[in-house]
Length: 250
Image (cartoon, rainbow, N blue to C red; front, side, top):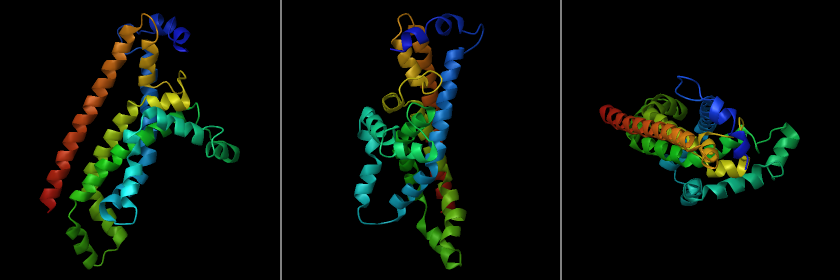
C-alpha cells in the first residue's frame, strides 16, 4: 500500500495548519477533486445535451437499447467501468495505444483518466436531468416559432435551450457532485497516486488504511457529505424553478 509512508510524517502531523480549517493534504485532495470533476462535467456537457435531446424529442430504431446502454454506468459495478476503461483507454488499450502513439495523449495513471472515469459514471445522471427538462418544454412553442419563419437551429437556441437551461444547470450540479464522489472506477483505472489521481474519496481510503488516521478520514467524510448535500439541495431548487418557469411561459 502507498498509504503507510505517504500519509505519515508531514501529512499526518506537520501538515495541519495552525488555526486553519483544512490541512495542506486536504486542500490538495479537494482542489484535485474540483479539477477532475469540472473537466469531467464540461467535457461531457455538449454530448449530454445532444443525448438528452435525442431521447426526449426523436424516435429512432434502437432507442430503447441506446437509452439502456447510456444508463449502464448507473447499474454496473464501478470496478467494471474502471476495468473497461483500463483495457480500452490504457496505454496498451486498443484506443489508448492509438491516442498515445499518434497524439501523445495518455489517460492511464493521470488526472485526465480520473476525469474520464468520473465523466462516464456521472454522464447518465446529467442526461436524465436534462432530458426531463426537455420534456417539460411545450413543443407548441417551438412549432409556433417555426411557422413564423425561424429555422430549427434558431428555435433551439432561442426557445428550447433557454427554457431547458435550469435543467441543464441541475444536471451539471448532479454530475459534478457524482464526479466528486467517484472511487471504484478511478482507483481501478488510474490507481491512487498522490497529487495526480488522489481525489477526496481516494484520500479518505488512504487515511482509513493508515493506523491512527481515523480523525483525518472523518474530516474528509464530513467535507464530502457537505458538498453532496449542498449539491442535492441546489439541484432540487433548480428543478422547482424550471417547473415554475415553464408553467409561467405556457
